[in-house]
Length: 158
Image 1: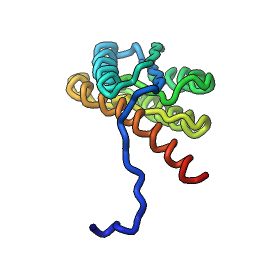
Image 2: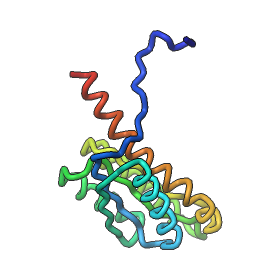
Image 3: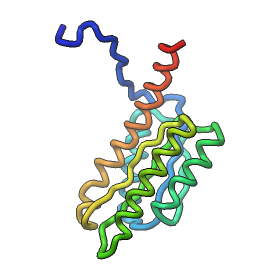
Image 4: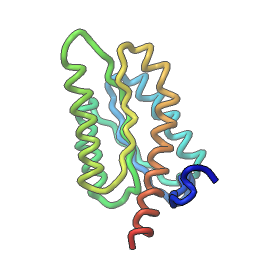
């Protein structure tokens, strides 16, 4: 064993069987959002997630409220936020990026439901298109893994 032989590690798990996953997708920058959605849902299905519910909202700033509403239903094991914020010529990029990320974090902390942040923040649309497949799949894996991590922590703490 290595340096951490005396540390009890909770193994990660990507078995999505029996999980209910909710997705909130921004319609702004729709081509990128659809690419994120395609790769996210493909990864969820690949990992056995049988129940996926998706809603769309106008933009990234509306995502946290929809996530919160979904989290409060107690119908979802995890949620995924999908969208793209592409830098423009004004300060609006920073506001949208910061506020949407902060809102997503607040939903997780306030509800205890894991939320995978699959909102790309890029300088150009080309960068967003280039990263959408990887980021969508990554968000799906994060959602599944966090459900299992939190469940294992609950078991360990009891």
